[in-house]
Image (tube, rainbow, N blue to C red; front, top):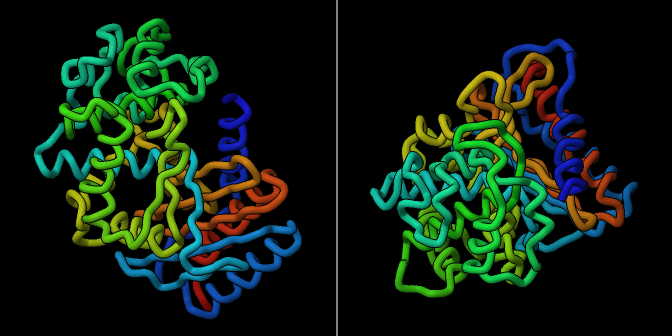
Length: 336
């Protein structure tokens, strides 16, 4: 688990530097510039021996650039921990529909969760619920949702709700299972109820064409649940940047990306980052020779995503991060 999150940290570190820049402007993302970025990404994929890759750029809720490399348009890319940004979007969708509230105490609405965890849904998704990160590696891989809750009940929280932020896939998984339980308490299999909840509150409102689930058999399924085509990824980012999103309100979606306090770095699957003077929000992961990075630039109302699948996860992660840095440079440099 530590290696997994070190990989995420490495991707995010590559997207942080002290170089000067300007305020991000969406108009700087011209068609010739995006074509240049795509050619550079394609060269990087080839140099790394990548099996496949994809990228998309979205402005004001509309996809302005989308391309796949060495794979079909409907190729599914596993999101890994980036799934947690979508998981928080599902929470926002459910809250908008009146089915749940982000500030509800999870143990009061999901009897499977031990009362020793006093956090709300937003706490679990922002890693403030006190879940010990070492627990991620203690769970048998094939554990059911009920067994996962039972194992969590045996582990003492490392802090109270709202305490120190420490990344834990178990924290996100417990929130996801609980959302599925709230959605359908009659379904005994919480993996199925989570999948059905995703279908109703994510896939349908976002009009995904063919989403898939990843790691369904794993104990921490909701934390790394989704696999999307670049087209469906673009639809997700369209929602994140739309003036009138199909899920919740623009303000709600924006607020969920902001950490609650200045010393915190991440919230609801997103990490605050900065480069060339621009502040933006990133969701990224690197695993099993795969890497991805998605970023939302609020001041430009733009977003972008890169995926790479190569024999070397580190190279894939660096390629995605470097490619996103090119987008940042374009956003902060006026087109000639």
